[in-house]
Amino acid sequence: MQDQQPNSRFSRRAALLGAVAAPAVGALGSLAFAEGASAAPPTGTVRVYWLRPTDVPFDQRYPDGIANVMRETQRYYRQELGVTFRLNDPVVEVVAGEHDAAWYENTPNGGEEYWWVVFNMQQELMRRLGLNAPDSRWINIGEISAEKEGVSGGGGGGGWAILSGHDADGAAELGGDMNRWYGGMVHEMGHALGLPDSTFTDGTPMSASFYSYPNCHFNTQQKNGIRNGPYGSFLS
Image (tube, rainbow, N blue to C red; front, side, top):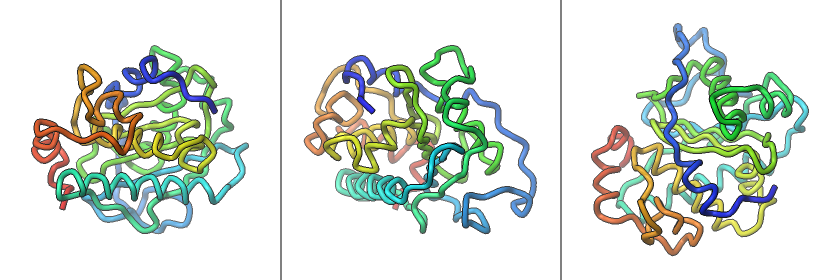
């Protein structure tokens, strides 16, 4: 899928999440987990999901590719901060969606159609996996293989990043230069960890400079914001 131009898409994908009401959560034993999982992973880690709509066949390139993007993002954070977040094994939890792609794309959820796909995904993940927004147990990264081209988008904030089909395709190496997708995930992880957008293209990954990855670096204020932010204790 074609990406939109950086300036038109950048501010939209950065909007904060968390307006979704948290589901009631019972004992862990009563919760549903992703395919092949018998229990939730350790707390203090980053959980990563690929939600596959009912009409999207399983393709190993997606969990493998998303995992590779997350490992590169993990490496970059250690390079920049001297500490980084922990991933799980397997890195990606594959979630068989309850609906076809068109349902996620066309079911209204939020005021702007831009958000429908990713908000529908996020709410399903929260309900089925017993997640909150924000969630003090995990940072949550969701990608879905659904997108209304030229309309759907994504964003990050409050311990979450939620991304639509072109990000999943890019991770699976179906969307051009991988540095575009590495930089995008570094940017969204920054939002999940509590950072705002930069106010101008300043050479940091919290600005449109992430499109020039790896030639972008956190500034001192951003590094301190991550370390002292709501998920700073997740880094080691």
